[in-house]
Length: 315
Image (cartoon, rainbow, N blue to C red; front, top):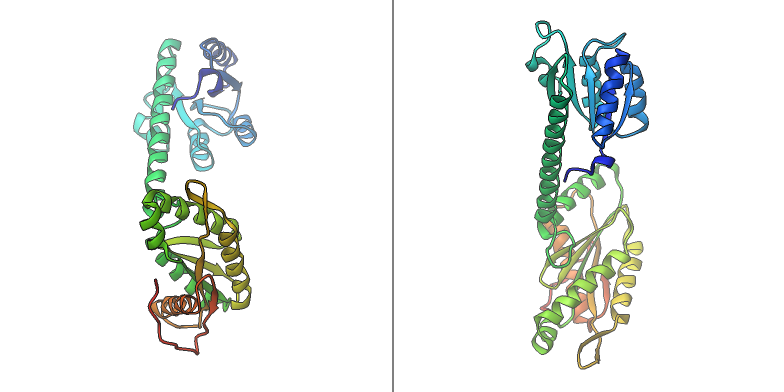
């Protein structure tokens, strides 16, 4: 999206006061916000304090030249650059473009042509920003669950590998929660999948509200969720798990005719054992969650690496 003219900021850099003032007046009269400075050093000072969408600069400037200014702008700022020169034999279009300029104009510059070039650069800038936003959106969709907005299972495995590597390298504790909504199939059968989806969405919000900034939550599949707790030992993770369990139990759901229905969660907690395989770590969290199911649901169970109880069925 191209910003409104009054919001579009143009910086003019030219040591010829007559050229500089003429360009400034023309671009300002066209409706753009503009500033004009006589040298590259002043331009860099302004760019360090404020944002400009486009910089229009002469190549021949006192001290630092316009090409070096362009290099520094493209290295440290997001501004587009239009380069002007009256020395067409000494500087080529390719040279200016290769260092990051968006356009190249031969002096003396016709003001109408400069304005057309400026509009084209702004339009291309808007298209580029839109492509970037679309790519970021697609990337986010690839790692998040469409319903709950939590990270998805593919993202879970990638992140858990990173956290395991970090835990082994720095010898920090790492704990995993595996959460499964109790009797969720019965809830869906009784009230319908739309009401079931509401439970999933609300429960996802509850999980996020109970976590710290460096913790992360994932929809593992169906009504199963996982939470990675970096630099967190098992007992502290139990506190987090109990907080999540209690918050869901206290949450009112009224899927039909104002009827109050309680939804509960069974949670398994386990701490990473240094050097163990990722699959072993996850399986132990799963077994801990099965233990919560077997002991009556709406429970939190901790399973240490030394123990190996058989996993029981869940419902």
